[in-house]
Image 1 (cartoon, one colour):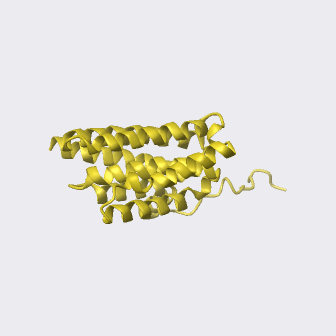
Image 2: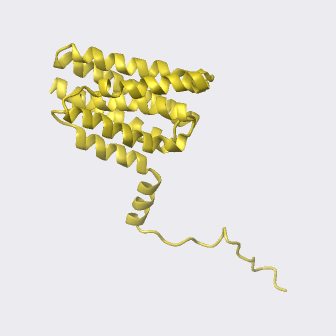
Image 3: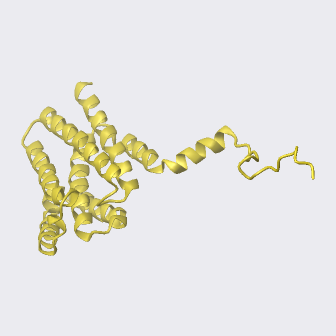
Length: 199
């Protein structure tokens, strides 16, 4: 037997040649939450971005709270969708989203405290304070002029983007793709609001 010719292992064999388009498509498929965040932030940027940012803040804060109470990270996309529909529907009816979603927040808080999810250590225990902080910022924005409202909303969005990154790194409470999407979306929407304020 001729041992001079080594047998090629699967790792030695060259893989299929991928075109630049195929590599780009694969990268997008891996980072689809980031792409989704960029697309939606671009769609929401503009004259209505401050009001849109207020709605996003309320929904984001409540999404984390409700998902923590459910203790099912994979349910976060469904929770987000339901809260967006409720918030947007309230706005169409001329009702402030934070007022319309207050009953959901109160019910989720009561259930979470009784069942213990919101008393668990770590990120679970911090969900109620973060939701209260978000609502406080949104309510304060109602009583300021456009500049103050925009500055408050932009600052809160940046803060929530950091909150998203913390959850992404911990891989707790919400599904990681949602945390990635929210981090990108919140940060870019904050940049759009700041650009609107100084433009």
